[in-house]
Length: 362
Length: 156
Image 1 (tube, rainbow over the protein chains, first blue to last red):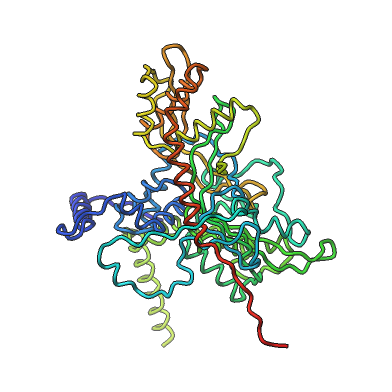
Image 2: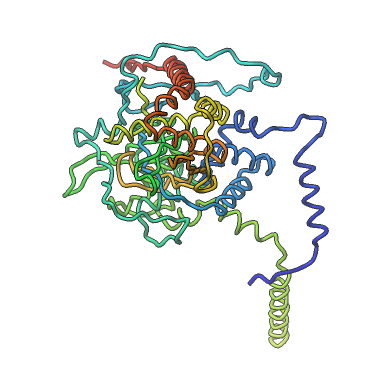
């Protein structure tokens, strides 16, 4: 049991003042602006938005400035901020099929309708440090080309396979009410929608490690990247007073359709199964790892033996949230004097009993 | 190029209003303020003070299946009434209250048949800018289009 302590107010105030000064760093170096972080640390901002579970690039950039670039602390600030705001409602479900694409690749079909576009990617770079970047200067302008006629029509790869029945279709929208883990605690076992909400806001490193573990044999799912698409998708919301979907603007998202093997069963002919990942921003690693873990967590539904952590929904969901995890780990450094005093007493008593018993035996 | 970022609803009047709302959502506060000035800067009272809140963005499992909660987006809303009783609304991503309020004034103006063309004309510059940005983005993306070839493995 945790027993509160008091005192230390002046030291705490001074520690926070010191933090502010240290955060600023060397005052002869120009101070970062929020816009610089938003524009030039964009993928870090995306990560804070994804795990903070709030799309607001300026807020995420400001949080990163305040936390000296500590991602989990920044997520904490974003999550705390959202609790101060009213919720107007839920959006119309995003139509990722109608995204304006800046990147789209498939590892399963080289000639998909609408084509593959690499967009701004680290893939195929040599991963050599570019020392020229240590100096300031503008890059050469991006190349341009006339979009081909088919570029405007980019169906999801899974829709193509789906037409032949070779791949399972998405679970239908049965109009059932949607649970929300920010409102109610998770009840296990929980449905796939609840799992995806948790994974979407889950820690990228944790989900990456679990996804990796499935590839290495701990809950194998034989994945292929059916498609990764990155771009901007419209967000629409139906306000009560208007009664029609109002366009709020567009948000950047990354979607991953993982295509997995499935042998079929007596009732179901052999077909590919699927895992799904979706995240705010250009967050490919996150979306891919999420899709791997989403598929792994369907083990029970698909009659697969549950033998590894990535297939265990309580294990995954209860531990994937970086804020919850850091809260419980980091609370250990807060004063536990009374707890520890009690343990100390107990150990002393047990040692005394141990010594007594030994003396009696001699 | 058609705007692929918007769904459609059946009523053409609502569809036109949505198009104006989408333009306002893509505009800067300065652009919208300029448009309101061009429309004669009408007096407007707040039905509700501009307010920052959240909308839970939902996705669909597999892209087209059952909905799930992706995460929230910050949204600012405003509602105004003009002197002649017309009301206007705005809901925008982000936390810019002033921008939402001027967009609500433009929405209110647009409700009057007589002002409709004036509002759309005032927003034409924004439409042009966003269309040009979309085309430029599409051209840069198109330059990265890739045709992968499968190499023969040299086994007969």
